Image (cartoon, rainbow, N blue to C red):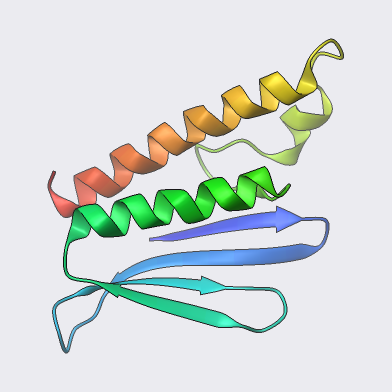
Length: 109
């Protein structure tokens, strides 16, 4: 599974995959400066929690999730003027719940 976050023209890709040689799971984060961070997990619940933490940290730092079923930059620009931060937080929390459901379904819990 692959998620992409953008901030301006920069992109961060987050990939969750199965490591065929060990049977463990890998969380791979590719940053715009060329760094790639790979974390390995035997426990899928820990993988899901870590992935959600990474996505939450990116969102707090102004990165926007892109793709099907997640908010795009267009709705953020049209947020109500009275409390755009609350509307963005609500949208990101809803997206996080969708990500958690998708991951849980993939790993059977």
